[in-house]
Image (cartoon, rainbow, N blue to C red; front, side, top):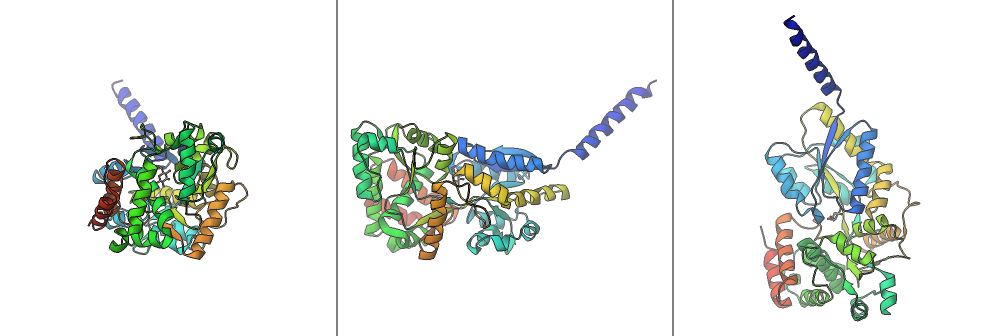
Length: 416
Ligand code: BGC
């Protein structure tokens, strides 16, 4: 009699243990894809993993360009509970590799034949000390200008191809009572506009010298002064409520006709298409003024953290292979506004902006005008990028002169 509750408890315990053993393997993924278009995109990966019998634990940290994600990730890694994977890009992958916390996923790369599907500029970034530790997701182009053609028509303005035309259009939009430039006053958005301006004013070779090689002479040159002058002029076309505004809310201003133009990478296209808008008709994707022949790239990737059990490891490799699959590369990038990073994905379903991105990337690669995005963590280490971003933000939010800005920029570029 007295044994009965004990037996019941034991039965219960073994049932719990059995269900734990049978619980689906799980991956926890840290990302910052929380806007409308972004959330739709990452939902596809969740669906795909669940279809493979792997549970998805979402670790989403809101904040454009991962503004807050890195802090959250550091806290988790220090606490000894890193997620399975996290969105980490460019040179930062090496920084995390040096911490000794990333997992070797060569097995997935071998199985998926990544070496034959990815350009070597990409594989280099995904490896730490010769071993794959990250899987690439897509290619975003940063040097775009998003335009509402109905706003242009209402204002009697023309779609701009260079800065003279841009300011002429901006004047007309402003005079017609609309916001000429949709923007959110956050340091990473300021840096996004800045780098497109540098590319437009100075060209790809100058961009490379200044923002990739951090050449002191280029950073303090008259061309850099002119870039800040141009940025200062753009500032006068931004509305007074821009401080702290999220990028997708700025995009929404272009979508609903409140504003005419936005400098932003093609994750903005994800917002337009999620709102049912059609490129060429409801919105235009134009290379940022003066940057038609160049391409600043931003490659999203998921870096993999060391996990404890063989089961977790297996789920991690499944995740890596899913990301590289043509099915995922197609559906994710259709929603995200980016283009596939690997070869062998059909172009058939991609729209005119994506096709243009694909063609322009190939052409600029041939012409030597394909450049890593400084603002999106592709070009330089995070300490230098942070210091440079601070200077640009200060310029945007004060009466700092272009001359003072170039001096501050050159100093920031020396950050260790
Ligand atoms: C990322 C994109 C993201 C955007 C806005 C960029 O740095 O590469 O994937 O959509 O920031 O958060």
